[in-house]
Structure formats: structure tokens, C-alpha cells
Length: 67
Image (cartoon, rainbow, N blue to C red; front, side, top):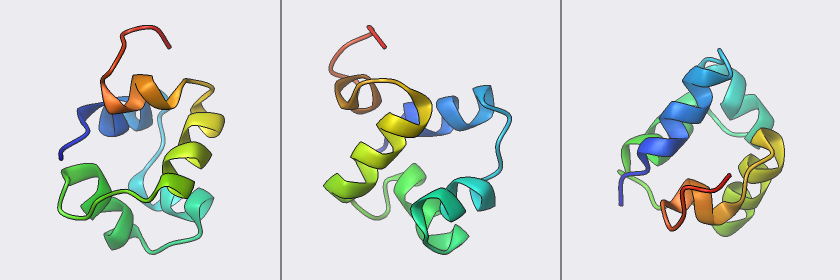
């Protein structure tokens, strides 16, 4: 599944893929694959990104438009 909101949140925060990969303690290429939907994002990473961006996991997953 492709999560457009991962990319949107990163761009809105003016962050690079490398910077977000560092937040997740993974390689940039791994994060890029999460963002593009090549790899399924693990629950722990989804939660960490929701906390980092101060949004709900449902928002990232596209289940709601309410941050």
C-alpha cells in the first residue's frame, strides 16, 4: 500500500528522506521503500512517525482527514 501522506508530511515538515530515516533508525533506502509502498511499514515505525509529526496513525493510513 502506498501512503501518500508519508511523503506529504515529510515535505510539509521540510525534511529529507534521510532525516526521517534517522528518526526511524533505518537506512534512507528502507524509508524510501516505505514511502513508495514497496515495503509495508511496520507498526512500530508508523507509531513513531505519528508521534514525530504529531498526527494520528489513522491520518497517516488515510482512514481520516483529521490529524
